[in-house]
Image (tube, rainbow, N blue to C red; front, top):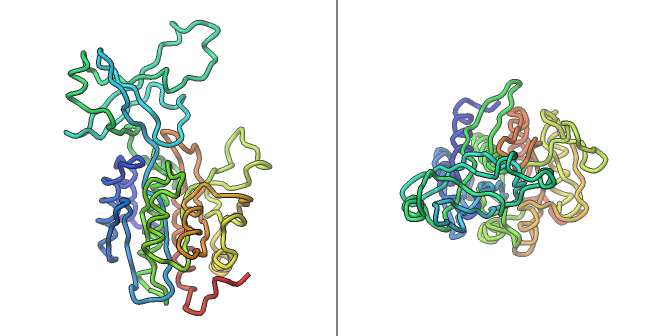
Length: 355
């Protein structure tokens, strides 16, 4: 089960702003927690590393990216309104009317996203989707000079919200993708540390995944760690709400357990280790097929150095890339336990070249 201490850490981690390229605050929260049971370091890309059983062999990397989607100020007009560009993949519709929290040089700055009211929009324009260029941010400033005294071009922001616990052991937050992955990787390492196996295990809170078209921080970190095996932890779409076709997107569901990906960049050796462990431990899971890339850190890690035997464990997530994503605490517990037990099953004799 997820302990009360781990839950408190998770809430703090989720509520700390850290969009891609600006991850230092949540990274510090993660490192402070990791120091309680692991050797902690960092690298130039902003990745945070927590290591257990340093003399063990082989080396296993557990990766969950700590960045979230956000926005960045790119212009302030003479009236003091700010204009923003996306950090990561946004549907601009979900930003309309939201409060934003910007990471200013002098502290947090708050604004509201404005858009022309429906009463003032011509009838033929009403059903058209809004673009980022249709939106602005109101900081309450009267002039450009006043707004520039609050923040600067290049300051980043996120939705201003707090994590909430929902009925049936669910949790809701704007930053579940993929602060949850960073949490599960560290929770799995904590459990592994209680009874280490043969392997050296390094959990990593990676950076810049949401904008990591060339691999983000994960590719850098996989090179410096030199793992023989990696398990990436991310979120995937929960296909248990109205309007989604299972024939297109699979069958992952809240409370259905972690989702194990097959195909594409996934090592059959590591996948089989995960599936065997889940079956032996009676941990529920579902399968996901990926015929090409996975759009996760796994794509960069599996080709690092001479190649890394890589698997992907995903947590079902409703309403991805929105102000209120939703996951199950039960799924987090099962994912962390599955990964910890799988790491214990790896020895120096494990052959990652087997097919």
